Image (cartoon, rainbow, N blue to C red; front, side, top):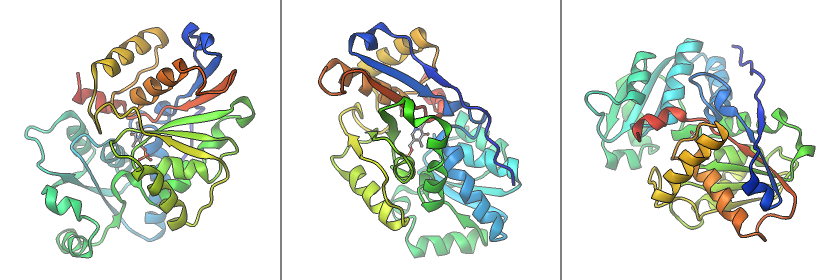
Length: 297
Ligand SMILES: *Cc1c(COP(=O)(O)O)cnc(C)c1O
């Protein structure tokens, strides 16, 4: 199985707003890694698929919401690498299918609804056994690709840029798996932007993941919790205004769930003047996931 990466461009933003604050911002365009297996999901799936193949598994099963970037990428990856895929969807499956699930179904993914109460306990043995009774043997990938293999793929992201050019790497965080992977190899500090509400769940989660996955951190990392804009997939007028202004100025596509919150947060913090050190050179990881835009506009 070949997981060859194309050249991933790093785009330096030309922006007087940043010059004023003494910042330089570059974007690692991981959204361009693959037309469908987008952004960090490509990295999270790589070692999961290799492991599944090694174990002789032919079916991959995972979980996600009705607009899950993870299920969307998994369906495409299954098709590309010759696995059957089963997507367990939180709550009801919309009829007709939304654009995300329609893509997944067209890629051959079998979509299975799971009521929200069961979904909260989806990793309990009872539920997993029930899934195995219904669908036979499969390789299970946790929601969001949040396992050791997922983190190991993301640990390769720092090899895509020259660390000497930057002082800080910023990224959007949901499960924190991408941050965990990066933290295990990065030579420069990381700042994660949490896109869900909640005070310190993500910091605890990254700490727990490092331990669970047998990884140790090679850099300083921290998490900002101020820019979730109301919670997961919630938006604010300020966020949407920022998104469209930013896209017009820089021709970098964003979506409201992750990348817009990340950049909005960086621009807001830059206005504080003393948050980032003077002449700080920041690398932003664009996590991809642009398919999710179709759920908003
Ligand atoms: C899934 C996703 C993330 C979150 O990654 P985690 O490893 O779960 O923290 C960030 N950005 C985009 C675009 C995503 O699709």
